[in-house]
Image 1: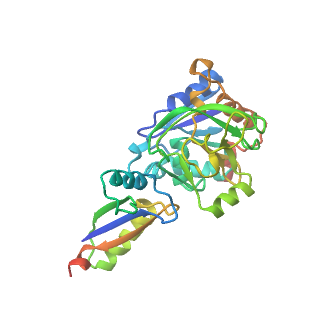
Image 2: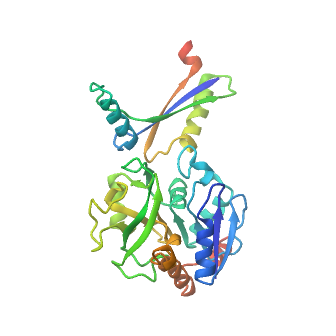
Image 3: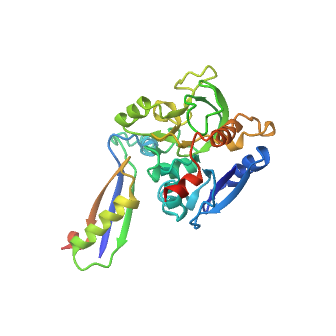
Length: 243
Length: 84
């Protein structure tokens, strides 16, 4: 199967995501420059971390208007699995593919550290190989990861089981101390109502081999392979069929 | 024609930067400053005949790009209206 890694000017985790898919998992992976207008029959789309367009104006605000984003919108609407990591998550929020917005971290600092996140939902293409309640040790690296949504939106996310990852302690309890950035309800990642679009602030692609200090992130990529091979989520072919 | 667009976080949204600036001002002895809200300011030079056309265009720009309606609101001033 084939992963597409979208490259915006200023993306800097594109190689990590490509490496995780191609070298660690042995799958096909291809970079897609943001000015391109085709996802080239990819089965999974990854919007990587970084500082797309320098994060000018707001994080992800300019990137959402890149030509490739029209294709990502179509791919997502047809049920194709899309993963936004860190800056990619911010792009998904700005594009309206996921609800909410990011504020500056509560600490007002750029934070670079390993955190613990609990997997709460396994019926998404990026958690299909996880256990419910599994706690992953994955690094964060962001200045604006303080997730915000109005209370009625947060209530809807909880009701629909759209909170996929939450910052927790080792026991999987969402405490104030385990929340690195002030995110409402300790939300680290979420999915859309259709569950095929997932975004998270931590970087699973930076935790795919023990040489990196943790291999806990690999399960997200393994999940995508599992979900696509089982046909649980429609792929690029579905996009073509939907046209 | 010049449009000024002021983008600010909605009152209900916590502003960590504004909080930090408030704390710094208190450190400097400005205890009378009760709160600071930090925002963004844009000046748009617009080719338009009438102020209302410039305002309409500036509002569209603010809705689509300059602000994020989830967390921010905006206010527009048209320069000619201000000086007139």
